[in-house]
Amino acid sequence: MNRARSREVAMEIMYQLEIHKAYDQITMASLLSHYEEILDLDYVNGLVNKWIENRETVESKISEHLKGWKIERLARIDLAILRLGVTEMLYVENVPNKVSVNEAVNLAKKYVDEKSGKFVNGVLSHFVENK
Image (cartoon, rainbow, N blue to C red):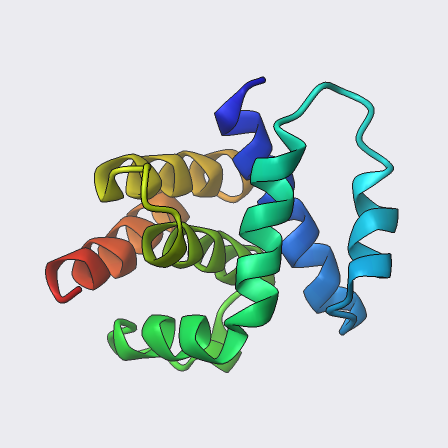
């Protein structure tokens, strides 16, 4: 069970739920069924469910740490990555903040570019400093 891949799948599902504006278990299970590889399903489900249950708090924390940006202006993939990072840092106790930030930055570099990685690092590092 690769934790990094499980985070990536959780981020992809968060992204897709936002695109569909559907934040329910049925949609989540349907999206998850498209992944055939072995994942830490409990971890993926836990992250996505914590985000669904606490969307307002997570969005608020992201908004608080954006400098010169409004959350509505963010690229959806950047927002999904930030949601993943903040959700993990707020609600997953056994993962160090440094790991959450690093994994989110890696996802930003993979899915967008180096510039996005720096942006995600800045927002999440600011969040950690003020947590």
